Length: 436
Image 1 (tube, rainbow, N blue to C red):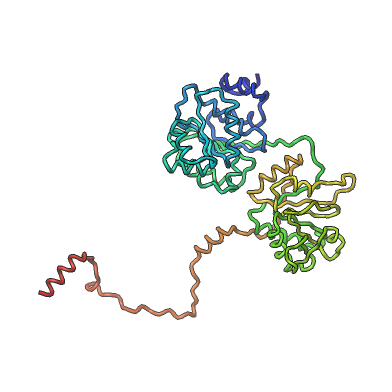
Image 2 (cartoon, rainbow, N blue to C red):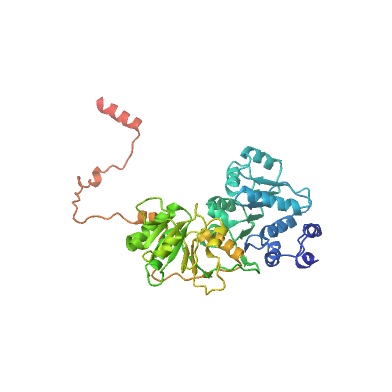
């Protein structure tokens, strides 16, 4: 049996794996499972469906013998209730140790009910970071004996802004093994896990399907924030000799109008919006109108409420936002004229929080986006918080011509300076002595 040959798993667990239909280990299991069983901190990076959850469920069950204590030894953090249900279902499928108790903590039931379940005994806790932290602060979650902390779908946890409770829970746990599983690895995620990961092994797998969709060539520009996206877009589109006809996609009308205002100052009538909300914007009712207008070079389209558009013979397709539905993106970049010479180029601007969506698109199309270097002349916008922090640190500017009055009083002589501080009661006694 492959599982028995490759891994040091208990016989009962090997039987559970094979009965569940997992005949052969997946790539991420081959690369990480023995490291995890050996006690090493691991960061596993791979696409959805590559076997990340099964990997840590197997290693978790393998830690327990029949004499479970009912005190949490494993804490698993996941981004939402749906993911928690999936994790618990995986445990139920593979766990034959009926003495093992699993408690889930999420917004689906009350805090009091979940605290009662924990009080009855729990060996494994599967929770959202915010709910686990709330119950821990109420002294309902015992972390003293936790020896394994797992963070699953870490990129979604960062996207939901749950980094702080993750770090607080990790810091509240003593010496433990840490496992992080994510679809992507980026700076914001690294910042979250860096305080508690101990020399982790970073294992990354890619499982692209063999069948590839016919899509236009794609280039990926990884930028820090939306302000830098706008700067990059302006930098490209000001080149009227190269970018003769360009369609720019945004997720919302609000973003589309923001892009329009950014470009319109310099491009004037060369930029238009598809079905604009306000009449003062240059607008077109149909993309054929844009194609026929030689004066217009850039058309901005909001994905919301927009029917499929004919992008044939458009040299550049730019996604300043990545739609949540990957099929929307794929419909924009699919090449319907595979027999002809493909001269259309799809450019994608993505921040850290959008890289997981890039990964989903790559898995769906069967092709990797080519990563492009940012132009040297691109202005990188700082995040708003960083700007505010820097502004607070700067000393206030003083006008040299402004009159500044001198000190109103001269410095007291040493013999007249006050070096004591009498109580009000003692002062009252002194006053009484003066009166008599």
